[in-house]
Amino acid sequence: MKILLADDEQAITTELVPFLRRSGFEVQVAHDGEETLRKVQSLRPDVLVLDIVMPLLDGREVCRRLRTSSNWTPVIMLTHVGSAGERAMSLEEGADDYLNKPFDPFELVARIKAVLRRGAPRTQSIAAAHRLSSGDLAIDRPSRRAFRGKREIALTGKGFAVLEYLMLHHGEVVARERLLDEIWGWDYPAATRAVDVRIAEIRRVLGEDVEHPSYLETIVGEGYRFVGTVDIAG
Image 1 (cartoon, rainbow, N blue to C red):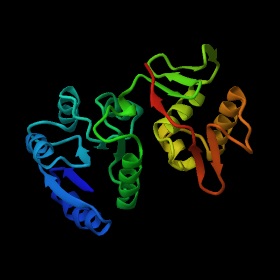
Image 2: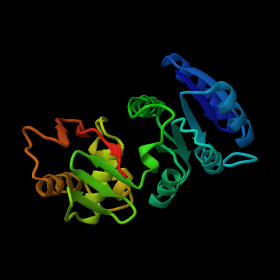
Image 3: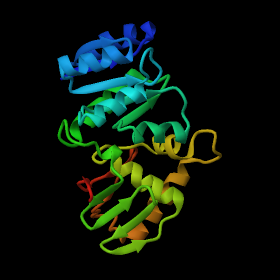
Image 4: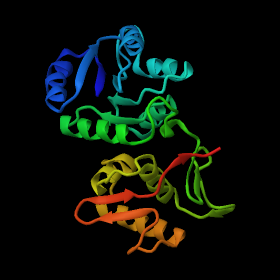
């Protein structure tokens, strides 16, 4: 699998390139936004790891131009601010996932592999879709509403956010700590128990059988996984 790593920080690329190669990937590097766009066209990478802050064109503009031209190469955005707004803007521009700097290189490899497992390459990313579905379950992301068939179901704001995140990362085992970080933020006074409460809420609303789940599976000692197939809904 070919990875294009776009980052102008030499310290980052010097560390990541050999690590990614040892992990079994073919890696090329771009140092600014314009070079990134050229190399995406010439190299046709399987995944683009894209820093937001770069010379000439920033990462969001690069992602925006790719998506506008119907190029759906999976993008993992490297963000510098761990705020919900920063993450939301990355997804709105068409990124498939994001990591906050600094990050563990092993986590980057895990995200790359997860993105490659999700969906067919060069098709629209579910991260950019306004509406997602799995069986008769659907969520409307702009309005923050969830439905079973034509019936709207009542979820709290945090409950919806947990369901949305797990659907966006369907098939992955997502640790409680990751959900806490991504949805509550570490500056929020909450413990991992808060995640379990919201999972219980989702299961109650969906009428899930914990022993035979259709949507949310508990992976003991690790976290939770959305087991249903997720599609972009019309």
